[in-house]
Every structure is written in C-alpha cells, then in structure tokens.
Image (cartoon, rainbow, N blue to C red; front, side):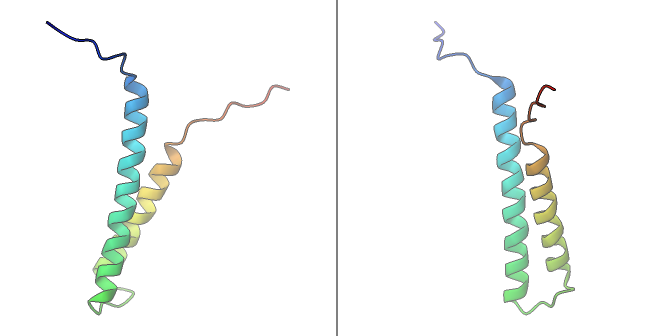
Length: 74
C-alpha cells in the first residue's frame, strides 16, 4: 500500500538544490583560502587561487540561478 505524502514540485526542488550547492561551493572556496593563508601560504599559492575561483564560481552560479523577474508592461 502506497501513501501519498503530497505533490512534489520537481522544478522547485531542483532550484533549491542548485542554490544550496552553489552556496556550498562558495563556502568550500572560502575555507580553502582561509586554510591556505593560515598555513602560511601567500597570495599566489595554489590554495588561494583555486579557493578564490571556487568562491567566485559558486557566487556566480548562485546569482545566475535566481528566479527571473518579470519585465514591467509598457
């Protein structure tokens, strides 16, 4: 016997998951930068460069995943 919990909105779930993973990517990048700098790495260390790239790409992906705004009618 199957129980129906409710209607699952696949598009909403996908959008929420995409935003969550984007924020996670951004956090991982920031942790990489902090960890590299705490261990004595300089500004051109691989950990800093890759961490900044992760953070920027995560932030860009989060920004691009935002819902589209409706254009006002003229």
